[in-house]
Image (cartoon, rainbow, N blue to C red; front, top):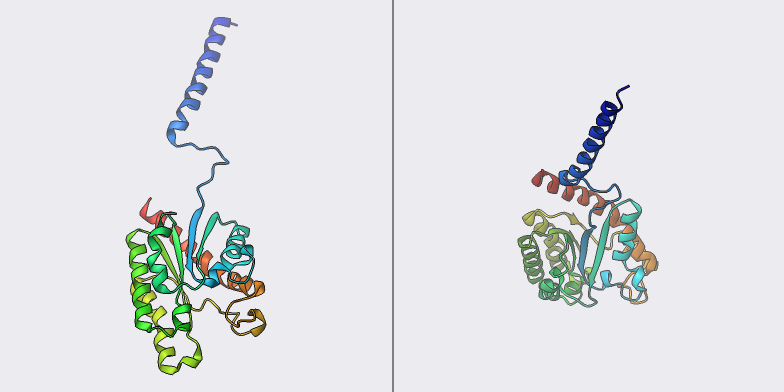
Length: 229
């Protein structure tokens, strides 16, 4: 056997392998354990999001994040709930919230507007301004609806309850119709003030929101893939 010839073939093979290894990173290769950054979802909300009367880890945004992660979703939920906040307050602090660069914002506001008997037209105007500003910043918007207390009269109830769907249709944003769905039907799920959910109530909100969030995460990612082939 010609040892010089055999060695030459071996050296050529080694050089070829080294060339492949050097070129792979230039072709966009990433380690198998590399992970995309989490999708950042901010909840722009009031005391329901803030978790008034419950421990911080019992608020529904925290519970929702845990539920999404349990489903294998790589998300971080930023709880931007402020107790007592109205739609006007949410609009005022929108720039501050956007500094966190969320990918998605769930707008959960309006309950305090109704509790104060504010003009539904003003609530609608404020929510519209919030959505317009978020969309101008290329942030995906989800909207959570609220219902007015029934003791405010049928005219007020009709005007207030209907504004969320009008806004969702106008701006083409996903609507979760009623943030207290599954809670308001059971008085035992409210604290003594009959306004704020107990920890069990907050868990129900998160559980009910989970299918909505997973579906719209899928939809948002599909849109992103189609626009970035």
